[in-house]
Amino acid sequence: MAGITPYEIETKLRVKSAQSKISQMKEGKTKGGKEKTLPSDILSAVCISRDDVNADYILTGRGEPLKTPTVTRINHPKGVEKLIPNQDVLLYDISAAANLRTLLGDKTQNIIGKISLPNIPKCDGAVYVKGDSMYPLLKAGDIVAYKEIHNFENVVKGEMYLVSFEMEGDEYLTVKYVNKSDKPGHIKLVSYNPHHDPMDIPVVSINAMALIKVSIRMNTMS
Image (cartoon, rainbow, N blue to C red; front, side, top):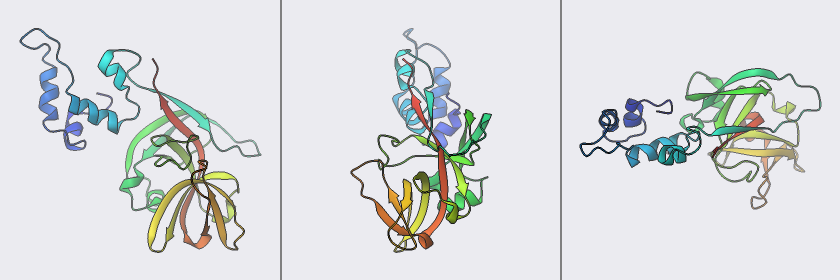
């Protein structure tokens, strides 16, 4: 089922008796001769955990089982950038990692999937977008693929970055445009959504950055 086993639905998605329910479905029709349907708790859990699953297809049979991704180039460098014809990009669970620096430091942990993307630049990984600061360019549930930045001095102003920083003892992770700040030793984080004000942060407060190369949005084919 959408690449998720009954065991994972029961243990990871915490659907009670999922293995038993799915096993009973495989037996075919009910005693009254009706086709058995997928229990709502299983359907809900799968659709919430997998943005690429088309719930409308499961409920009505319309469209395709999986949503089709729309890939948008976010970064447009001035020079010619090599595109990889077919690239498998690992999708990470950033919420399971201590912070972005931890995730970038150990790329074997917190992997939740893999995305096959054609004709994009080399990427180091991908994560889900949270919040609405870049809406409507990016919305919650979209995926962004990134390239790790090792030297913050190499940051190109005006580009979009995944930025992890500390402020007054708290850690923050955000997707923003990075612009030049009027304050020495700072950068300005700018949202696409006009309801979010720009903010200046000290460069020394940044613990990790990654350049956003492409965004991926799942669309339902009807």
